[in-house]
Length: 299
Image 1: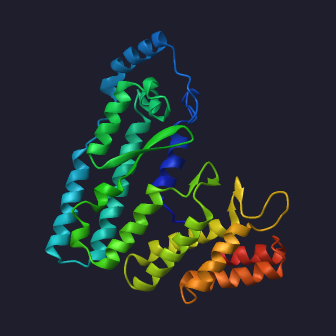
Image 2: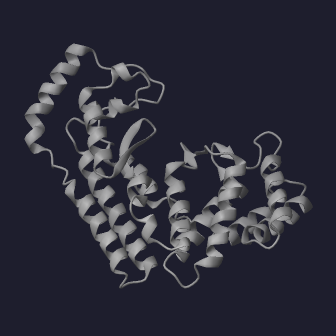
Image 3: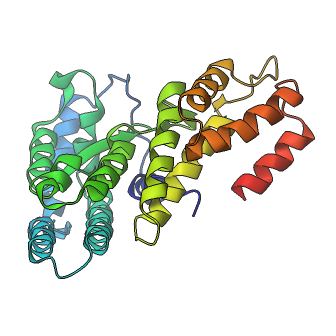
């Protein structure tokens, strides 16, 4: 499960692309400012009104019931907290997926998708109303490659629950929520800093040491190795080895060195030290030895 990172986000993005293959190509990039002409938009909205009865409704009460059951279970304390938290997050994530199934099939999806426009005057009122509805009922609106989708909401997850949780559970939730509050990646590229990536590996590694034999362990390990792979290999549009020079990114190298010095006994430092010694021996180039190392580490 070393590729676990942000299950809902990954699922949602994959699902978006699948669900919209038959749509006409009206999706927009973040900076695109074109919108349908008003008369066309009016006709489209009338057509959507006729189809409105065919759209499957959102049962927003489900998220509130899930949250109340979560809080009740914590208050009762009859089950281990790790089981309660993971069961809740799984159910909450599945509900977000269910709502995305409905969203992607909405007849007015293109109108709702105007939320991606930078110019707010171009956003339809129905889109503003939908965003408010989503947020009021415990989720968030995110977007990728010019398309909106429904995602988990860290404020909703943490509200009223952190005061009932032990310190390890709170640490787990903070790390978990950070992964979708500040996404690491977008459009086959890394969007957070090298330092932030190194810090995430350090934090997940520290948590691994605390959650052995709990249901937090597999998620912590998955996020640890996923972020580690992003440092070592990068992604298609942001490779760790420079396209021109073929050399490994020195910023990442320096941040890892700094972590090894400050936290020499941490799980992150142990991993970094092995990689740093190898990359120096290979003159910072992606040799066969480095490729074999990646295949063994992340297979």
